[in-house]
Image (cartoon, rainbow, N blue to C red; front, side):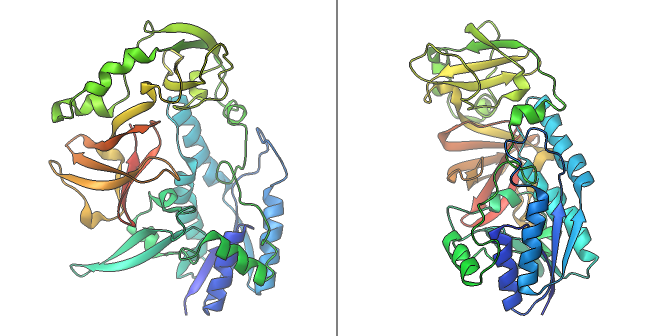
Length: 392
């Protein structure tokens, strides 16, 4: 059997992944990652890496496998956290979990695993992997997990063929309740632990407090845009000449709408956000429909059906396109239908990718709520994740 380094986090998913690999007869080594030491901005300090490491060590002992700890905090700060700060400062909303998988778990961590002569690296992700032969070349497929409520393939949407060739996802065929049951049956120390929440490895934090470590508060105006101002956009015809109008954010102007309050920095807000506005006097809740970090303005609209929350399409620049299935990479001038996801746990939506020289224009069959610059869009053919990219 293979020599496998399993990323043991102290959670139930990675613990069961390790148990299954052990049962299959693999030569196992458990490796725990320390990626974050700071407590600044933490809502709770009850879930620290020290506690996670202790539980992970107990699981390894229970399974009788070697246990090691590796500190990747310098890489994590440079390649994930600094990127996150830079994106927020530029007015975009990044997804640190996607970056963490691409830059840390399947890069820095993978390199550490190879020091143990690993053939594969295993994680507790709810996704699957398969191989197919295309013209004599082995193509690794990243497939959605069997549990529709826990499928985490989206978080791995930036992996490449080399990274996938070394990956194992032992629980991808299981449902979450089945994973819990296995953990209980085997009396694993992590069996009853709650799933982690918040930013990957940082934990559950108050995001504005966390961002204020590097991004300074700056008072600016909150401008309310009436819904009637947006009505004409729905009438835009879906033609190639109108792709840019349909796929890029609406160009709000400071003089459109009324100033109804102040905020502490446009870079602290994201599209669709409701909390943190602290403005009353409206029948329905206010939602952020746009941010302008240059002018330090946030635009809001009343009600969850405000047309400013919806868009027909999105754009991904050529340099930001990533094809997991490079054998299915589109060429400029081509159009193809896919199932598309613009955030984790969002249902897949039907749409067409029109590839041009400057990038990909995504046109959805139905308008999408809360398309956000800086997030990742991922596109699928059935369960097969084909590619992904950063939304402009």
